[in-house]
Image (cartoon, rainbow, N blue to C red; front, top):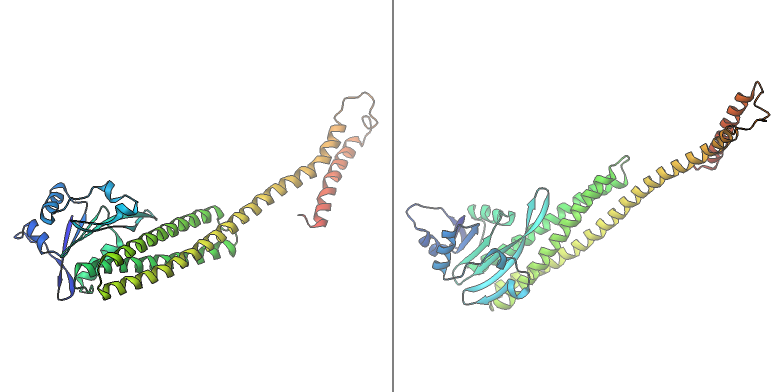
Length: 318
């Protein structure tokens, strides 16, 4: 799928597809081309019209710094990590951005919230930019804002989860551990994306030229990233504290169960000894012919069982 956008009077506008306009003409008229799983024909047409080599998925996913940010005769290449929700979890998706003099090309395999929001804002005329360079800066700025919203949402979830674990009775601690693990995973991926974004922006600051406005905007984004990184560290500490507390409560419950079994074994041990004594097969046993021998043995067993129980109760161990 291909989406085309143009810059008109300092505002980015989406170009509506027309049957009268060829694909080559749409590519030439666009200042931003957003591709999602393009077909082979679309890839070939883009490569021919823009005079580029369309990257393969494996090339986009490379993690080496030299492979993710570079400049060649095709333009300026930046491969950036974005967050993608998937069945209640977040995954990181790499988007290849190719910046040329009059066009920005973004290549991705999945629908992403950052691009969907930017597209909706463009339809309302809310994205202000004069060049594809500024559009790329705007894309990173919005990405950082979305990460800030994610961290704020995770903070609220941690507050609710903390109250659930530490204050509520009969809370499902195993479910709490699972929720904490999901939050830790999401926080780690947000941190990874922020680190990747800071590296990309540092590359752009060095390579975009001497335009003061663009460089100042990029520096402000870096400051925002530094603030969010500190918040990520705070959330990591809070997650670790909550995980340790939850595991501590689980250990207390397990110890309580073991304590119950230990006391039960001590309570039943004396009656077992008495029953074993009277279960021996000797010819001469004083109580064997006694009329009250059986009630006497039962009474001793009950007394030997209740005595440890009352002692533990008196000590406050129960």
